[in-house]
Image 1 (tube, rainbow, N blue to C red):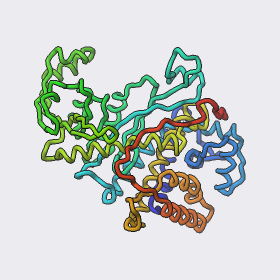
Image 2 (tube, helix red, strand yellow):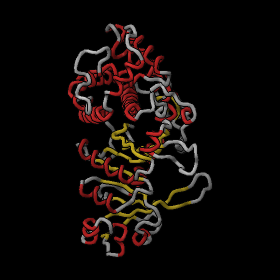
Image 3 (spheres, rainbow, N blue to C red):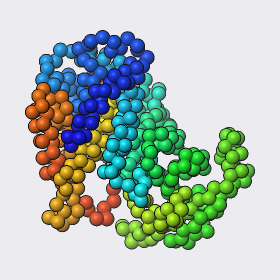
Image 4 (tube, rainbow, N blue to C red):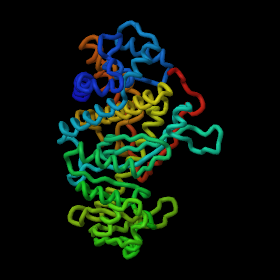
Length: 442
């Protein structure tokens, strides 16, 4: 845990100078002279938020800093508005690249690959006219339809880290977000990767992009997609095809003549797998069809079955972010504040996972004592880290920082939950009260 906190503290302090131009983008006069609050303190306060009123948040933050509250909420708001959230996103990506580089030996891989997944969800935003115009609503016909945004994450399914986050209008295409994630993964990850997708993501444009990037993928297919190939397989079969497309089969891409021409003149050697799966509730068998560029030598049919199973880890992320970390409890209704909150919430989630990873390495769970295999309780871990996070980084003395770290370690070690066999993870809808009652502090 000490290593994670020290890495984070050193990185964030240094990053405020390295990314200063990004932080004050659009306002070159911001943070040019000594102020009551620095970019570093601003960022720590964003991490420390617990969903209270802004005055309470400031009061608690300064109490943890052990300094008097000498800035008004209006002054703090102005400082927050000068802080470009894109800088936080850039820092988080850089920080994660450092983590993957420095922790190569401790990161868990699948057959030598980092196993990732891409999936999307929605976020309920504060109902301001500005947000409504830019992001849209769920139903234009309803007068009080909530303002919504579309969010997508690229997730490391085994190490449980959010690698990349995209946010856009409610009508945004998840495939467009996926294309951005794929390029981001190529840029920041030096390890070979396998990226998994659920039904609804298939498009030959996405497949072509992955092949061009030399990235491995596993796509869960809808029955309607490429059925001229999938229908040739019986349950449990596994076959390679040389896929070609004629003019009629490329009608979907007629608005992009360049890609359509490429598609008609390219042969794609891809593998189809039809995996039989038993429904636990009805005791009936059905088939899942997977499309991949992994060969039989690179990954067996059983390996693909395991990849498909591990992909479901991403289904738990939005539940944790929304319901455990209160992602939608934004500190204000302005776009800059919303994006600051989103990126800091995701970063804090990653820090929690890294803390748990470090604790697991130093203090293994004595599994022999329990009936079921046990794991750290993520919900309680989030609360522990939120409680002791600031003091463990900026405590006035070394002794106080060390005391906070020890308390965090002891509590993280104490709280365990069983891993129940055959239990499916279902994404839950957020129960965020801010859909109807919102803190319009900013």
